[in-house]
Structure formats: structure tokens, C-alpha cells
Length: 90
Image 1: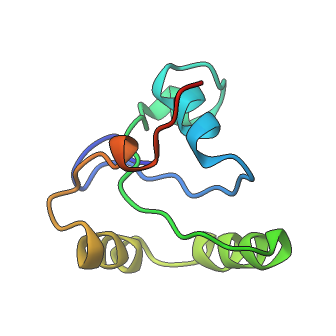
Image 2: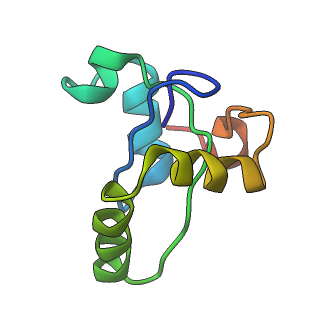
Image 3: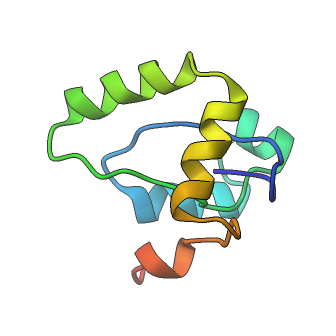
């Protein structure tokens, strides 16, 4: 999640990406994303195994900001909101 292009980023893990993004987009989750306006889904990875996803999250949280930006821009150079790509009726 990001506040905008080159803005504040948030890395998290969930078993329900559309549901979790909906919560962040609408400010229904208190904490970092709400406080920093991280409402745009600009990058994601899908995993079959939740433990593997959690391990990746922990790894990425140790990354330098520049590495995260590079990862986002490799697949989403315009930082477009990917909500429509993953949205489903709630």
C-alpha cells in the first residue's frame, strides 16, 4: 500500500487481499496505513503458503526504501492503483 507515487509505503500480509485493501482504502484499519494515508495498492505478490508470505513480509520490512521503490516500479512504473485488478464484490 502507498500514499502515492514515491510516498509512504506499507508492507503487510493477508489471506484476503481484496478485503484487506478495502479496509485500508476506506480508513477502517487504525494504525500506520490510516495515519499515513496509504490507500493505494501499488504492488503485491501472491503465495499459496501463508508461512512463505509471512517470511517474505519480514524480509521486505528490513529492505531499504530504494529497494522497495525499485520493486514497485519494475511492475508498476506509474504507481497506478491496482485495486480494480484484484477487486471483487464485498
